Amino acid sequence: MHQTSRVVLFREVFPSWEEALEAFIFLKKANGISPRTIKDYRYHVALFFSECPQAWDPQDANKTRMAVLSFLGQDDIAPATFNIRLRYLKSFFSWLVNEGAYTGNPLEGIKTRKAEPRIVQHSAEVLTKLLKLPDKTTYCGKRDYALLCLSIDTAIRPSEALALELDDVNLKEMVVLIRASIAKTRKSRTLPFSLETAKALQALIASRPREWETTLLFANYEGDRLTVSGWRQRLQKNYAPKLGLKRLSPYDLRHDAALHFLRNGMHPFALQTIMGHTTLDMTKRYIALAESDIREAHETASPIKKFIGNKKRVR
Image (cartoon, rainbow, N blue to C red; front, side, top):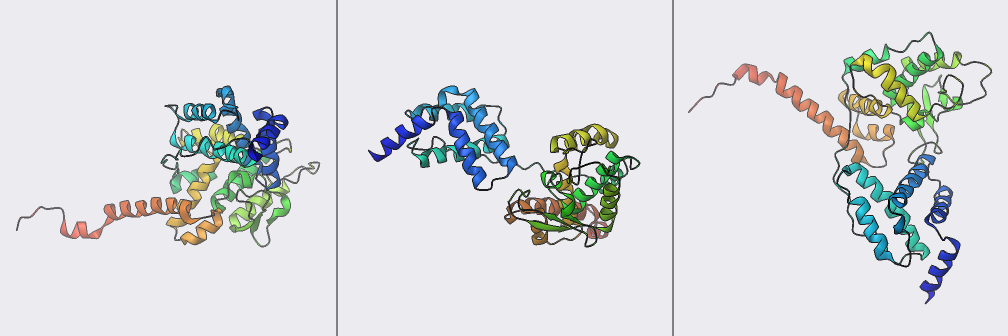
């Protein structure tokens, strides 16, 4: 009886999924969830209900269940996309269950799909050429060069790099602070960078127009925020064609940094800390790729093959 009264109260306060989503978002914000994650919740929940408007019916959980199965059962959904949708929707409906709106989570029992991570690898030659491309006689060129240096030097997440403020950078100590408020994991960390990156950042800061009021380290040509999508478009349009690449994204630079760190001898636990991974599981994916590089190099250069040869002998 008590549960029924909660359902009626919820229906009166939140007659639509839009209002339910807003209440859910308020809770997530109160728990300190990052703006990027908040944006993703809004997008995926709204996408589900826009494609399945009949799904919002707390009185008929079976109807919602069938809508969920139809939405997630589309043939052309990549495993990674499927898993993202499943995660956000399951969290939203789990909250509805806790609120008493649904007697059960309609996504219960639906398992994630195995998805191979897309980890891009660029050679040292490609990255060397990339760093020579920005026109450092202009502000945008200096910004691009400094951002490329910082990305490759620290494996920083693009969203974290573009949220950095001037006070987050210590050129004397050559470290940058990733504040908890801008970190994906909501935990702060400090990243060291090299002298080359320090020089690039110093040149960028010195070239900023004095009239700019923004405290952001990386701004667009008008002094406003440079978004991740804007940085992606610039990499894709201005630099990828000159490198003979079909695709170049800000996250590719993070992948490149991680793999080259490992190839140059960095300890996996140090890499985990630098990249801000909460567990070693994601870091292990980079380790596996680096180890495959070692295997290929061994197969190509093993001296035993030269000494013995590939002759087949029968004893």
